[in-house]
Image 1 (cartoon, one colour):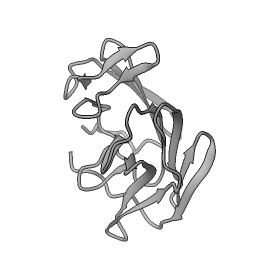
Image 2: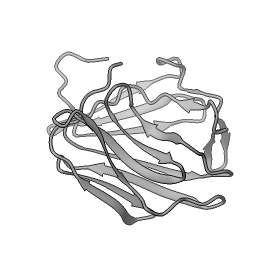
Image 3: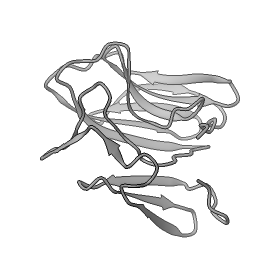
Length: 173
């Protein structure tokens, strides 16, 4: 959704509550706005995930959380704390807004990566770790883009980076 008079936020934070509602905080250069959605927003907040003391637990098959629209043009920071009972094969999205464009953190054959779709290069670009994740370990994964470099951090250590020029192609919602 777009809101008349709003400009592209410089930062977005999403908080997910146990009742399934989400709070989205948008930060702008001049003023901060908070838009709160209840669990009936779009796809009802989340599906299949169950709450534990540590947060949401996913089955690795068909569970998801809808964070609402996330449109980034110049920069972003995404972060997630994850652990796995089994390491997924193939590509598994951790957090993203992929839809013929966008940004995200994914696990590909056990290796974390941060990726974006570059408008100028008309291609997916990613920074991928060369160290695979293991089961039974909790990881804090952060992906950033400052308009010039994609960076992937695992547990506070830079795991990969890639120079990329241009803007991020917006997803088709």
